[in-house]
Length: 279
Image (cartoon, rainbow, N blue to C red; front, side, top):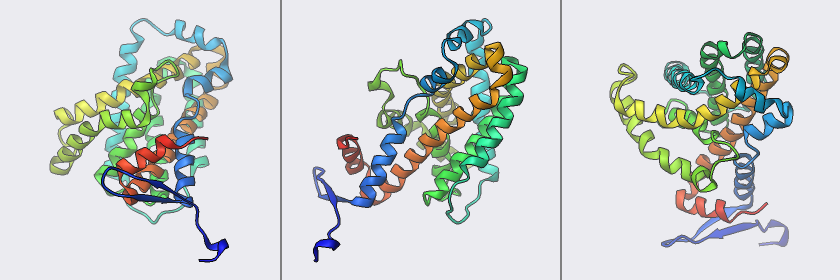
């Protein structure tokens, strides 16, 4: 082989076999890791809003966390229904990130003008828009949207992009969160394959939605706190939603790049390569 035809590779040696990542796939994995380990939504909101974000948390009504939990679980369930009923398979193409950001910013502007009281109405709409965008990204990475597994993987993005900078890294790492969710996702996929979404109260679905909502609800609270600041809520509700969807688009791109590479190299080898990567 001539000098200019040599392809850079990285070797990952699992216990039982040798796996080789090409230079192209290694670069894709590095991009995925950068996206998955980018600054949290809390940090990005703080950069935009500053100190008022702290006062926003204080302005949230009493028992607001309970309201957030109910609104989040409802939004995720409606998003799952939306994905099951409307997402078909199309040929892979570049994802329409800007279109979905514009839609999310529009709903955020309307919700921001109404304040936190509008959250139970606005959140399901925003969640469906974000889920559409996440599915678009999955399709652009070559995944089949008719697959229940991929549709649930789209929903899984909300948990992978949840948490905050205060989280213990040992409890919030990408592979750790996926490991925690894997059994819930598997059980929910089996239930949907057998019965569809006719029984929303099925334990398998309830457990999965609760697990995702527990993490997604953290960033929803951050979004609500930013909107609760009077000037911010009236003027930049759309900008907050723009950051919101931009955050989850980054997570989705990282997640579905990894899932694409997993098909080629296997989970164990890919996880080892991910952990060994440095920036």
